[in-house]
Image (tube, rainbow, N blue to C red; front, side, top):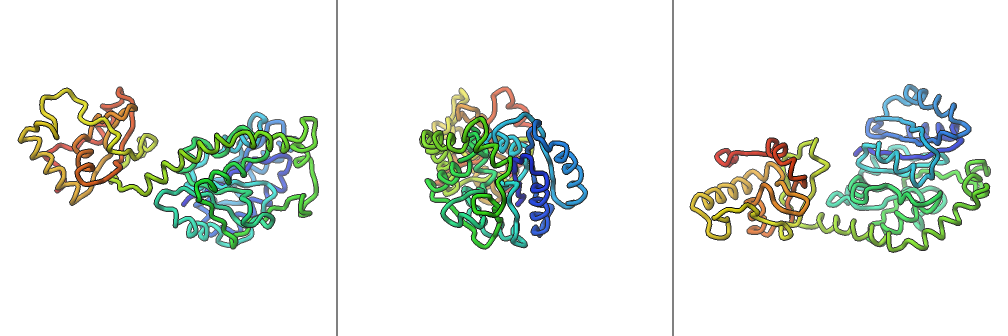
Length: 358
């Protein structure tokens, strides 16, 4: 799996390179790891960061990617989402510029730990940061499926803190927390004497804006309902993971964003105005065609997803939906599209009824 380590950083280019170097030296399969950073345009050390951006490309060659994004000053709650949009990882990892990865082969060990969630890929994992242990997840690890379900990595509402606590609490609600004590990513935080208080720590705690961490705590305490909403959306994915599914063999890369599993009992079936319907007064030709399709799916599987519109109306694939119903299959793979795009999708998914692979 590709791992994306996502890190907003401020006024710490030396610490940032220390972090990159620690990940580089402890990673076994570097081509499966990318590191993305966000730097505010008003950062006092922006020149050093830009130099590091070019230097890191050569010095740490082998990573899938090392990238620095430079943009408008914003909270880390928002900047984490900016770089999350640019990442390609199957796994999204919260990073920090005061972390040092210490466990050799952490990437392969992480793969092994997360394999138990392969059914639905919903989890909140975290490494041993040398401070919190099992009691708190300070640097959450979530899946691409988690990220795409919620449409964000972090809430985007906080000034500085509680992004990790938000994700941790949602994972706790789902009973999907997974602490990995033998993978160590040490947090060199000033509060436990592992570093000195610097301008970056002070920027969010003692400057003219007031203690942003304390303000975020107030906001966190008022937003439990939003975390419950996250829980419910993710819980639906867990249900899909446990459900029986008719899985297409081919999902076109350009249509992947439109693909999802749908409950066959919630679909609007046989929408076309026709005199003969599959389960109500079918013709002999329909009966034979349906038998042939059933034989094909049983022997070879379903080649392509069905096509459904935004109102859950089946545009192409009614017989495959009935196959699921007749065989007690709960979910079916589908492209959910706008009606006007139907012809484009048909061109990519059409199989002549005489060519079903038997």
